Image 1 (cartoon, rainbow, N blue to C red):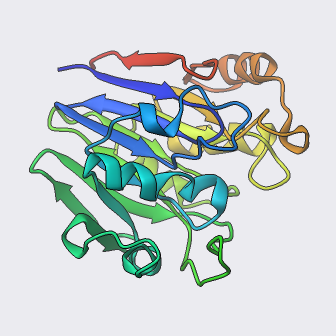
Image 2 (cartoon, rainbow, N blue to C red; image 1 turned 135 degrees about the horizontal axis):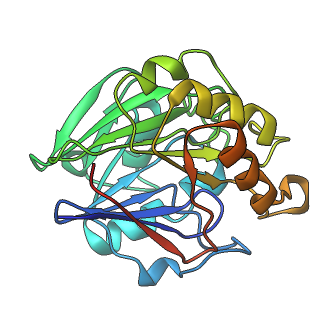
Length: 236
């Protein structure tokens, strides 16, 4: 079964593979580039990379409506279960960096390092930010770096054999185009998808110029999508 990735704008991603629907960092309400409304998306699993409002987004409302399982770091998982959010404990998984879990016996999710902040919208401690390494039953691997700066251990993540790397290129809050090129060289993915850019003026970037650099300076194939666009990852 093929795996398809849809960019919903900013860092929000919808991934369909192995018969499951995965929603990552579902910032839709209030997102000027959102390609869907919170009440329109479906999910079996919701992943939250860190506590900032443009990543937690509509996770609680979507989880309540769909019954999706939510995975994040431990601190965010505890916050999600507090009375104001009230997600039930069996539906919330609090992992930590380097830890992994096989969801529904199909998709393995491992938390990776990320260098960023993570305070939750109400000021609560959001723990440490993370990225995600997703492994599907056919061996396909997606690495979503989420919000992060460049770090050398991306090379270790690359040793897993990454089919698609999803990297921020907006600069200012995360790595920018220059450091993303360095990240690609460390990770060595087959394909790379840019996120976290052009949502707001402070993170405006020319994605086509970035893609030209990826083609000329790395061995990866850039996949530039418009919000709402999707990419089906070819088999190996």
